[in-house]
Length: 440
Image (cartoon, rainbow, N blue to C red; front, top):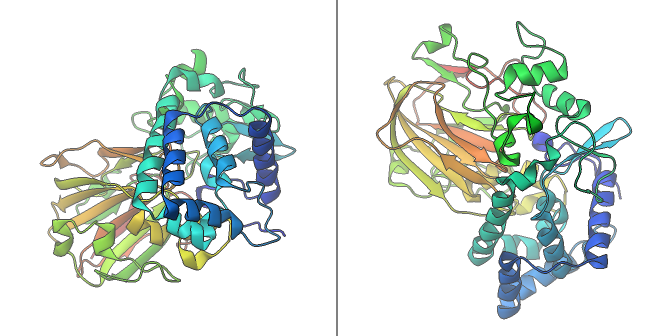
């Protein structure tokens, strides 16, 4: 059965056959050489066997994958073994003919079919399961933040074997650099070079003459910053009525009828503001018919957040949530997590930054960074009481997190600029700090 669908942010390959081969190699590898379980994995395994409901959920999710869906992972024991293996690996690129395969969400990949089942829905909305997953994913984050993860930050083949990939290459290989450059919306314009290596050096803070381009870890590379002057708010856009892009991201959705409470799990996934804001006391400053702008981030681009307005940080909050829950209305579609971006805004691990704009026409607004599978670490770098100018840094994703929202109160009328695009799953990046709207 062929299921190929555009995958938001290209965190997983669009070619399902490539992904199937990758998973098959993973399964064969753990079956041939099972490793001692990391204590965090062992803890989840013990919890599954001690709780009849969890055992039923983790067992039934694989039993419920429909016949004909090619899922090589047949049970949760194999799933745990593959997760255990992934904790020791950093993502690399894989060159297949003229295609590049990035399995940037490897745990998401092995759960692809099971997530869409009834058992998967019940399991991955379970609070205890998500607590255990957070510990597991923090283990991977620790590895990705260590110097041991730098082995993929090379030009050409990588020293540490990657038997699950076909022709694995390092991130500073020409093909990988080309993939990064292809996401630059300003590539070849003005002073921004077109050639991939020059494009990377021009855009990002790095030391190309040093090993690993001077990066201390995979996470250091992933959270790389732009060079000074590369992305700045233009003089024209410093006008208080202008709203700028908070992330280097592509427009996914924009509505002006968001309700305080809604059925976000239904087809169409309407926004439910009280749920998005985790019933924060400031959520009640908003109301029905608020405006929500949502945009997604690509795996190969800049992952820091910047303030969309001038104003005062009045509240911040990290919200624990789900990692692998997708909207039940999406069924067994492997692109279900992509199509669930409205749904996960209410449930996923996320960060809230409430900003009181200096412009009274805007007033109180909220930036929401939404984790999407894997690590989903949302680091807020501002404090309550700070005053920020538009474009100032306010936080960052660490490996994981691929979508964000800007929420404005009813009566804030914004003339949005999507840069010639219609918000959807198939849009291109708008530069961070570029104009995305004007308050009228």
